[in-house]
Structure formats: C-alpha cells, structure tokens
Amino acid sequence: MRLEREQRAGAVVKWWYGLQPRVEQGRTIPGDRAALARLRRADTVMQASMIPTTLDLCARLGVAPDEVGTVALIAAILAHVREDGDERFARQIGGRADDDRLISSLRFQRLIEAAEPNAQLTAFRRAIAQARRRARISDLAESLLDWNHPERGDQRRQRWLYDYYHTNDPSAPGANMEITA
Image (cartoon, rainbow, N blue to C red; front, side, top):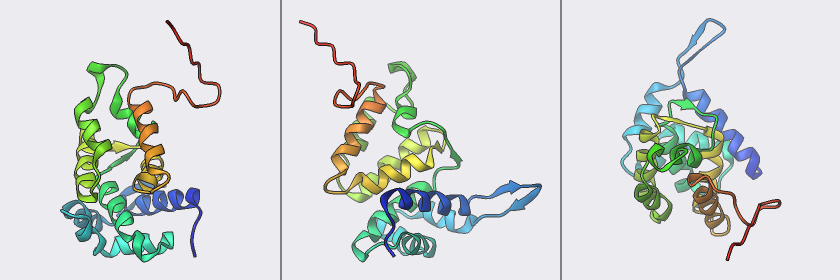
C-alpha cells in the first residue's frame, strides 16, 4: 500500500509520537527509549536503516526498496527531536534577525547544500541540537520526504531559504513584489 504525500507525513508524525515517552491522562507511556537511543547512535544512514523501528516506519509508509535510505535518514534525524514545535523549522532556526539566528548562515548553507545522505544526517542533527531539540515534526517530515526527491527537492530547499531569512517567496500568489530603481 502506497500512501499519498500528505498521508506519509502524517504517518511519520504518528510514528515519532509512538516512540516518545509521555504522560497521558495521568498514566506514563514509556514510548520506545531503546529504539530512540539506537537511532541517535547511528553514525550513518545505512546503520539507521538496519534498526527495526526504521523498518517499521518503512512498512507504515509502504515504501519501495529504493526509498529505505530516505526513511532511515528521516528516522535518524527525528530521533534527535525531543519536543514538537509550532513553527516551520527553517523559520525557527533563522530567528527574527541576524543576531537571533539559532544557526549561522554558513551552517545553514552547508545544510541546504549537503548532497550526500550522511552529510545531510550530520547537518540536520547539528541544526536540531542548536534548536534545543525542538522542531515541528510535521514540517520536518514533509521536508525530509521531499529533500532528495528529483522533482521536489529543489523547491523544498528554496522554501527553506525563504523561511530561514523570513522573506516572502516572490513567486507565491499575492506576494508583494516592489521593484525599485
């Protein structure tokens, strides 16, 4: 069963919440701390792909064998997030001003330009650490599902650029495009 894009992001969010220890209605839900620890210790995407909880996520998403690496990348990155945020991640790390940024422009550039999955894993983990392990899971899930896609990857990175620098996409409907001479 292959899920649609929106459903895939939702399935990733449900998977992440299922791993998190939490308190619900006065009861402690242990989550799966061991799986989170194994994913956090995975040094490479290949190592993350061999962890059973990653394979569980693959099954939930109904991915093809050539997509296991993408799912492993997502699992290893999201394992470092401890709290679900309320702002798109690129906006969050971009801060409101130059001196308010959680990651520098140079580190952000490295994250955007990272082409190899293991370099992406390192760059995203660093960004999450700088964001105090807080990120909007749905946004990260959607972004990471698109990140290495041949058609949607560049669009997603472009959106992250606009979000990081808190600017409007000039191609968006209704965008105010003033041209000054």
